[in-house]
Each structure stands twice: as structure tokens, then as C-alpha cells.
Length: 284
Image (cartoon, rainbow, N blue to C red; front, side):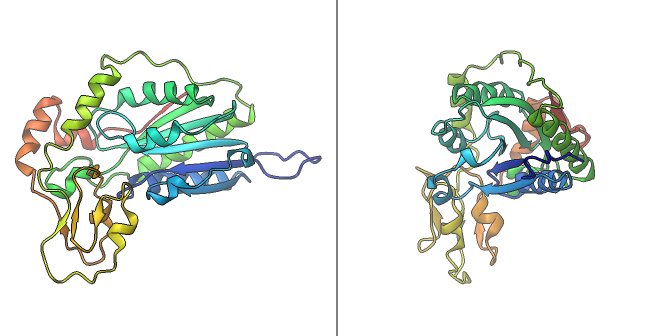
């Protein structure tokens, strides 16, 4: 347990900031929060998934360190998260970042996120990646079903402990350098566009049984969903499926892409079983 300085009994304060459309990243953030609070750490969780939440002023000066949590979309953190980070000034503050992903490409995310955080004057001390059920399982894929599981939560607890030691200076090291990816930022921008080509029908309502709770519109990270019309605007939708994941009536749907599943596995030279056996990792 972290010993508190008798001259300054206030606990170490950490901001745990995350984007979680379908719940994977939130589950890991909750585990990290619990692990840190067991060490007498003050943790403030800040959910930046909704559009309005990212417009609020973030009082970083109130915290001793920051942990960011993002899903991986097309090999990087979502564009809306990267754009939000570009508005921050880390002022030398120590930080860490963890990712959740559905079993496919994720390695460039660490390199480019470290690069972005350092550009914004943060000092990254660690990163991590955790398995989570793939977003596109909602429209026919079968990747990382049942994740995160107990092994992922245990890895998240270990990540919290090791990162805390770096935040407090008990471990004075910072994160090692990642190898430069084979994909440039421009190439990844093109891959990001391909993400939406599979989804030919964006989340929409095809029934009259909707209770019109308006939750889909309120929760949409990009203001893309129009609850009255029951369809997402293709100019803004990022296929995160937050609206589908949180619809209490279950009336939002997209097109079935199950016929692309086998090709996806072949493209990555993997199998459903190999994905399910993948382990979460911590990078120090």
C-alpha cells in the first residue's frame, strides 16, 4: 500500500479518462480504478465518449497523473479521441494509456499515441492493451467473444500497480521507445476509411416499436444519430455502435457482414481460436 507523506496527507490524485462506445474500455477502466483505490489513490473517472463531454474543460492541473483509455479503430485510437487530445497541454505531467481491441491489428496504436502525447507535452510512462469483444460482432463477426475476461482483468490490475509505481517515482523509468510502424499516418488514414466500407447500412431503426427515449442521439460520440428519423448521418457516424449497444428497445440495426468474417481471418492469417487465446499485454 502506498505510504502517504505525513506532511501532506492528501492522496495521490489520478484522472482516469476513457472513451468507451460498447463497454469494453469502461470495464477495464473500472478494474483499474478499483486497483488504484485499493492503494489509497484518489481516482476521478472521466467518460469522454459523448460529444458534449469532450467539449468540457478538463482541469488537468488538479491531478498528479493521468491515465487515458481508448479502443482501437483501424490500428489507432479513434480519430475523435486523437483530435480531442490535440487540444490538451500536458505541461510535463506523467501519463499512461491503455487500449482495448478485438483481436486484430493494434501495434501501431502504441507508437502513434506515444508520439501524440509527447507532442502535447505529456510524459508517457507505460501503455497496455486488453482484449475486448470486437465491435463488429454486432453485425456478424465472432472475434474475441467473451472478452475482457478474468485474465484481462488481472492484467489490468497488474498494469495499475506497475503504472502507479512509475507515477509516484518508486519506479523512475519511463516507457521504452516503440519501433516505427511500417504504416505511415497517411496510410492509416486510408485504412480508417475502409472501416466504413463494410458497414453499408449505418445504424438505423426499421420498426415502429421504438419508445423514442432519445438515448441514441444523446449518447452518440459525434452527433451523428437523429432519433426522430431513426438513422445515423453517414457524414459523421464512426461505426462505433454505441447507439446499438445502449438502445433499451433493441430496435437499431446495421447490415449483416458475417460473409466477410472468413476473409478477415485469412487476411490476418489467424483463426477464431487463436484470437480467443490472445493475452493482454503491458508495455513498460
